[in-house]
Image 1 (cartoon, rainbow, N blue to C red):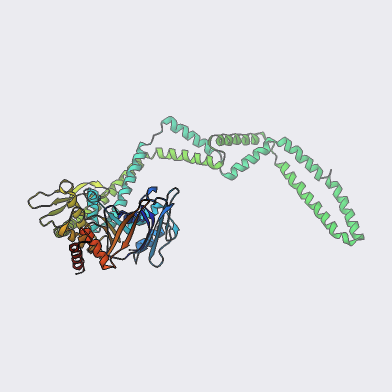
Image 2: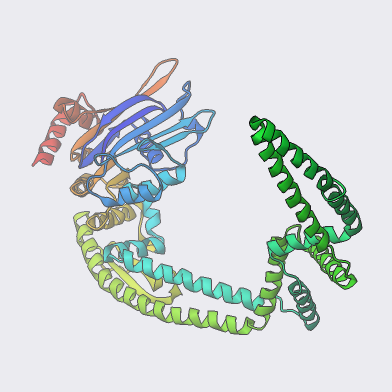
Length: 554
């Protein structure tokens, strides 16, 4: 539940800080006082999009913060970890969202920067809004199916079914793509085979290509290289250092016998002579490696020309050429296997469809069983809400296999005795639809894991004793949920475990909205109920307000 809510510079509200508790909280105020500001704050924290106009005039940004107590519910930390956000500390989930008048807003969750999409994912977990448009949602068959599935506890079974359905669609899509792929003509196939054969004639490993380029460079300048290597051999051999160094070595030996301090210099000169001989020998090996075999040179030239052609066509590096070679090979391979691949994919999809039909049959059986129980519970609740002779049935009919199974679900309603059962959208008025929705929500509350429920004037179009019963049902929801309800009915407001009043003040220059609790002060609450009854100064209205509060306390 929400323990603390802070609102700053939102719409007409300057600042409000509320300490909230469990149970049923009612929100009242004059028409146009700004009760929607509280709902707006909650919707911001739920991840709903917001225009810049929500920022109070004259302020730079609006900020909404909440401390949400998750208790021992493991779903929150699991989702936070999945979203790579900080987990809850001591069971508290901390939200903060700002909307700036000119710049991008900011969102933090448990102190970590978050995105609007992440806030929305968490919002789906902790809060559910029921507003004036909710009864219209009830008219949609997908909403009716979702409610039935919730009552039947089919969450896991449906998740498994939907995963299989998506897999089947993927297989069919892959089969269609494979079957529709352009098949090579005989000439195209022959051309690709010749290209593959040519590509296979050359070792395309990185090491082999590097050696080819090196050998070709040497062979193409063999004459120049031979002349240079001859100069080095002469300079390092008998015509150069080979003639001079022996004389220098003898002189250094003689010097070391006369002056032993020169011994180290003699050793260095000996090492120099040895190194010079090694260098000469290595250059000589290079010279011997120069081939004057025309056939070998021609083969090297052919390979180099082939490599240059590949590089020009397919890319500058060996890896690009190898990728082209492998692509051609795969294309040719697939040509001989198209029909077999399509058949395999379709066979896998057909087998999966058989499994899905078995799962759909199981879903149908569970839905048919749950439909009778849910309809019975809703009929009982509708009786309490003033429909003494109303009837509601849930029809589960066979349909084509689809993403939700193979069922078509319709809620059939009859508000009065002697009338035919008809789909809700053909018979229910707005007031009737609102009460049917409330009855469903009340029955489903036992299996609904959403901790916070927000009702915006769900009691519209009802009044009198029925209004009081609506209030009792909303209060009953507060036993398992934290419930907020914006209401104009004093019968409902009197039943709140907590009572918040929104007031609007205006002067010549500005308009401000404030929200404050009145449930802690009996006279303040009586005054607000008397206002809702018609006149806060009326003794009759005040007396009636006291009666409502006394009845609610019983």
